[in-house]
Image (cartoon, rainbow, N blue to C red; front, side):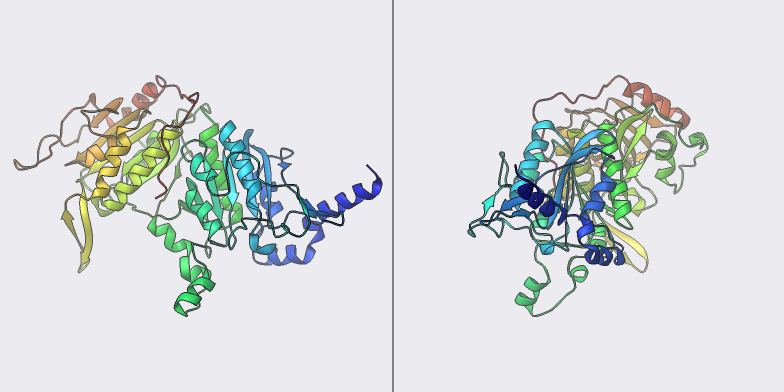
Length: 474
């Protein structure tokens, strides 16, 4: 190969680098953002990144053309192989060819590699704009998946993390929605139709965040975690994946709180119980502001990754409404697909179909919705072990939504109750009653040790050849 051809290739590759765009880089930094290459450098382990598709085509004149709109890599995070991708909103609005993403999704599916994507942009291009101009494409589709069907196929098989730190619409929003863990930053937006489409339809011009702001999605369950900035988003993505890849870490001591001193007769914070049982500094809460009467968190007990499911008596008395029921079901599906044993902390008056406030006093309507059936179905297909701890109440169908129905598949591997646990029926007219079946009634301070010993009996199994089920996106 002659020097002229090599020089042309070097120049094409250099044009893609931040050093070749100082004005754009400065503008990105002034908005407290990172460039696409900076995102990847912080996300991936040093020296591990292998770029895919930096060159997209060769012109009819023989010039090499760099890819536009984003960058893609295979690398590692804490030694775990991952697919890493970032759109570049300053380059063609972050829209780039879909063929390369489909190729990487195929690799992720074949090897069960996690995927982390920054997906801010106005919508991806289904084809490169060079097609039909006499250019030779070098980064077209390879593999079994296209742009949009790859992520749904990965659901329940490989973790898919999406990060939205700007406007994300159309195809980009679809990628965000298909992920099983969605992180966003304040001021960002996620929606299928952007401001121009809304203006054309309604004649009203809205800013992206006014139309589909991440702050709204945080409360409504549309995202899993809202963090201050892109640095925090990258740290959250790495930590989320650490539960998938880390296995046992050797463990650490829990908080020094003695659960025997916890007064559960009145209002108390279930977070205190969780922190006392789990390893110190190991908890990673998911959807904290959506349905806050129900806590979902990843954590570790004795170094082992677990999924924590808990009622929160401080919020709406721990009652399970339709949003909390939805939150339970999706979390059970997530833990089941990635082989995370579950620990369920139960203290709930049962299920409610509606909450409203009148003169600052909460009013509930007892009853069930179709949403309340979703946790039962999720537990029915759960194969990972679940250990339950009933700290006080488990009325009506409340305990069943937290553990599954005790007379069918997925019965808890260990069902503990504390000394103050309620047993028996509250009245003689209940259609559903407590089963009053516990493996033991223990002192609260014994909870961690009991759970830790049973966990050791259930090694994590990641050798199955096909996924159990997908993870519901809602």
